[in-house]
Structure formats: C-alpha cells, structure tokens
Length: 303
Picture (spheres, helix red, strand yellow):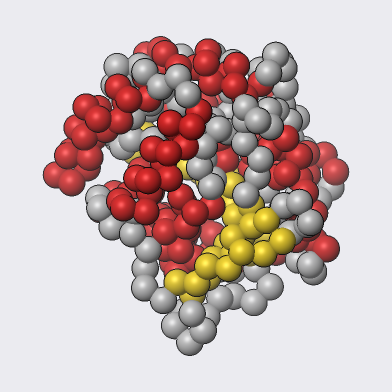
C-alpha cells in the first residue's frame, strides 16, 4: 500500500466516514460530493466534455479527447452510470476519472444524468438506464459496440440493466463495475464484518438510504438489487473492489451468480483500498493502476 493511499484512508476515516454517519439530509450529501470532486479529482489534459440529449427528458455527458491527441475508436462507446447511493452525484462529479478512462481506452464515454432519489425514488434510475441504452441503439450503435460501466449505485444500475438485456437477447459487449452495490437488502457478510475496517462507508446509514431510495419497494427487486436478477448467458464482466469494503461481498456474490449463469467474470480484489478508489486518480498510485486494469479489459473486449 502506497503512502498516498495510507494518508487517503486516514483522511476518509477521520473526515468522511463520520460525516456520512451523521448525515441526515440528502442536500448535504450532494453538496459534499459536488464540492469535493472538482477540487480533489484530476482530469488529463486535452479532455472534451459535451452535454447532449439522449431523449427530450434525459441528458448525458459525452467524454472524449481532443481530435489529434488520442483519437477514439470509431463506433464504440462506454455507457457509464455514476455512483452516489442513488441520491447524489452526477456525470460532472465523475468526469475527471472518466476522462482518464477514455484516454486509456481510446473509447468515448457517455454518462447519463439519471434521476435521483428521494425526489425520484426507485425505479426511476433504472428506467433512465434502460432509456439511455435504447437511445444509443437509435443513434446507430449495435449492442456489441457498447460496454456498460458504473461504480457503487451506478454499478448496480449497469448490472440490473445487463440482466434485462440478456433476457431480451440484446446483451452488450461486456460490463465493468467499481465497488458495485448489488444488494439493497444489505445481507452480505462483509456489511457487518467490515463495518469497522471500511475507511469510507458507514454501515449504520443503510436503513436511511433504503428509505430514501426504495420508498417502500422490495429491496430484493432485481431492478435495484441485481444480485437477485436472472441472467441468461451474460457477456464478460470485470468487478473491481477492495477487501475491506462493507460492499466486498456484493461483488463476490455477484460474481458467483454471473458464473452460475454461464458468464466469464474477473474479480479484481485489492487489499486495503477504499470504496471506488479509482476516483482518486492523480492522488494515489493505486487509482491509476486500477484504471489501467479496467482499460485493459475494455480494450481486450473491443479487440
């Protein structure tokens, strides 16, 4: 573990985790992420960001590199869903990390601004995820030209969408997820076993998050908990997560489900890395190293 990651873990344990543990208002969570992300996360030079309408009601941020610097692979795209517990975050909070991923893969990234709870509780975000995929098909992409991606709650959306698409015979090329939340019933053993070891996420806020997001819906609904979804011969999947996360077993169990359905799954488990540490690209070397592993997966899938 690098000294930079050691400091980052200590900072999150002292400054972030207690704040999240006592946070009772959604607007504060949004303000925290919106303000911290631009100051801490770094984008590569010559990155381009362009808002576009996927539909009249759904916008997305398209992320790529300036022409002539690192030209993108034509006709290929990563459809990425940002994290934030379904209540916070946006493509803007994740744009720097996604710009680095686009640079490493030479693939354009489209990040939808899906609706957030509690103003728009489940299944609003899932419906927007489905709409985003369909909109890419309308624009001329074939399913095999699309790789799904996401982190935390966005990883949940990507996996839930994947389940829907495999049963419809429209599976994308592949999927990757950083520290995905796959079980809104929070039944994984690590949710309690790693409660004190996780430097970032407090397990104590799960009930409040469920109230905000589910609005009395079933936490085992596969559209919000893809761990309980049915997959039919899923494409290759890459899951990256830390061994001290409370959500560690969300990835481990998800991998078992996908492999049982006939899928090929890579579990990239890191020691002592916090929730979605790749967001700290430029600050800790483990973030760039993690992104490079995902980029290798993406490039291998697109040949």
